[in-house]
Image (cartoon, rainbow, N blue to C red; front, side, top):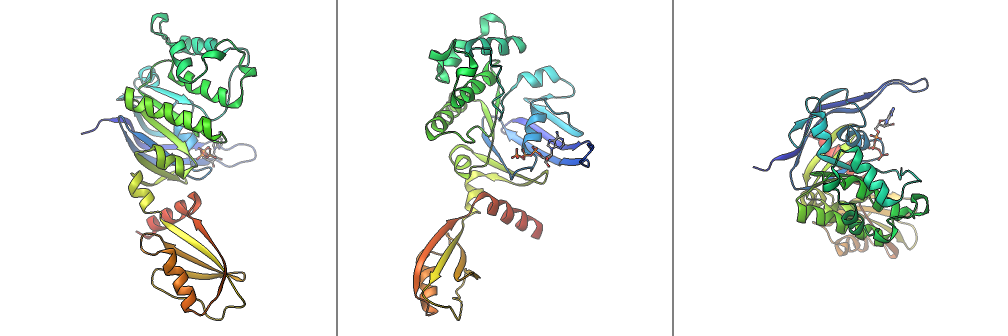
Length: 312
Ligand SMILES: Nc1ncnc2c1ncn2[C@@H]1O[C@H](COP(=O)(O)OP(=O)(O)OP(=O)(O)O)[C@@H](O)[C@H]1O
């Protein structure tokens, strides 16, 4: 059986009430096992609790209840070992502006107590493509370079598990590709377990073996990427007719409604083709002036998953 790199049981986090805000239960009892050697995606809408979860793993936020084991080490019993097993690339570009990349890596290694003989700063700089910026001040680095340096910093203590919080939010295609390549390499060649949060379905599809969807502080779904995305094949077509429409088209598998003057048709691409939809529209005597198709986006995905879960 595959070992768990991370084992989370009954994890709860309530942020205390502030002057202007009531207490917030950000995590409501999460149980989650993340298999060793996997690339695992944490998806969820804004405010779902992903950052809270990751920050607890990273030791930056203190949990309210429950237990977390990282690489077999319970955070409460072996805090040092559990922290050493994990590296986190944060979302914010929070770099000390006075340190050049090589110095930043050395300082980080020092913080983690990595002996000089085991430091690999130049190797890491080469890996993230910053060897020619080794001695440039951080404030002179572009956003993309800063992000790569943050990835480097997360790796200095040779962690078994790498956590990437929204690694490609707002980055260009070239950097995204480079980050993906790096992450794949770390996973395949070094067996590193990777956990990433993302808003991009495409990224999750490309990178992750398994996905957990977090919603309102709970795990709403957890499955292999293929199974999960297969459940999300909802599509929609917006059809602008010539003239007014008396009767809406009807056919099995179609969910038809009006959207202003247009006709809005939702269907599943596994069971229904675009031709089936257009055929049903023509069969209702409607002449088509224009058509647009829409893929399900992440919001639809969360809605459909949370709805189907509520219905169980
Ligand atoms: N320090 C804090 N104090 C009070 N409430 C907080 C704090 N941090 C987060 N929250 C609240 O907890 C909930 C979960 O937030 P969290 O940042 O974990 O969500 P998220 O899924 O990471 O969202 P995003 O995708 O926007 O980063 C939100 O309602 C948020 O407002």
